[in-house]
Length: 247
Length: 362
Image (tube, each protein chain N blue to C red):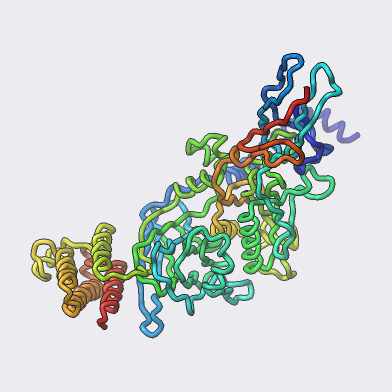
């Protein structure tokens, strides 16, 4: 059987509704002739939810005899955007959030996001609000905290949401306010479209401004369980060896 | 109490008010949805014209490429993006970058934000997806803030971008897109896009499945944005081969001439072509071909001096055709076409001059 480790993968379960999806092992039941010994292999398949899961093996007739092997499921190679002088981290952040750390991206996305915000800052004297990116382990970004509704894209570290209102650094900023609150300026749509393009991205229409950067490859190839935290055997290509089953 | 009495007297009034309010709000929501969420994608840009002129500063050896973009009235898209490929060909000579400045944008205080090419490349090195040749760039100036911006884009292009206030509307022309380089004129890809932000519906309408939409992300957006863009050719800088060989380079000039013809930059067929130039049958193309073939024959024979003379004759003809064309504006307008455009002129003249210089001529 497979169990998820609570709150792993930046999914704070107390702020989620519904049941967390877990991966599966196949076969789920292995029968050994009485008195025999040896090893058996099971194949682990992850879901799109990143985090840590435990593959648990137990003897049906003897619940005391069991072992477990934790496996970390994630899109590898994502980095924290971190704080920056030319942007603010916005979106669903904070201690009570569903996903407290959601500003992760590939190395390239992180660099491009910095440059994009710097360009905007240099031109408009205002800080961009960098909204949702990806979770630290990538994968399903269930924005409503229900293990289901996906935040389209935002799964593999190439997506960046930008707020439509920017915060000027001076009071008399000449840029138009548009529909933004007093003291803020509206992000020039065509201008941010171009800045996103300069760094190899494209915009997609969302309530915020979504800039999607290139990476290549498919999510299914990227979302793989990687090295187990403890003894879990060799893992790769979306499956995992569940380790030796005690007899 | 009073309100109750009113209600009793006009039992249906509140209900009809509610209906009116609902209709009003429904109309407002409908307008908002139409204008924000479901803005219709512009039709693919068609027949956009890019006019290019090139000048060479003999003291600095820097070429200045000036572009203007015309958005014809048949389009409904407003142009916000213009880019030219500046990727470095494999085996190309390492060009100088001294004095090449990227003028990125005008700041809120009216000053220009600039970086040298070297500074810009050092900054972008980690994320640059293609090697590029050194260039300077400047956006069109004199527009209300925030105006146009210029950049070396990570995909290996020089890109110019407009803002909401400064787009190229249908039936408008905008000039002032400037590129500087030590690189010779070459035929380069150009991509022009209308301003628009793609919606999920746009992507799905291309026949993309929900799974592809989520998994292939950038690729499907790239496909969509290219589907509404105009892609064509213009001239832009390139670096000559590091391992320079005269005959292959002359073959390259011949191929440029043929491609320029195919792109409509060299037009033959005017009656007065016949008899004016060397060949009475084929006009300009045949005449230019002959001169280049003669130069090649001399190179093959090893007579560099004579090859240079033939190349000079070729340049003379290119200049004469272009000059005549510029001066005879009335005739050109009447006939609706040119002998030779500014693109073909720059392409053929400057590459031939470079070949002469490499052969030791002046």
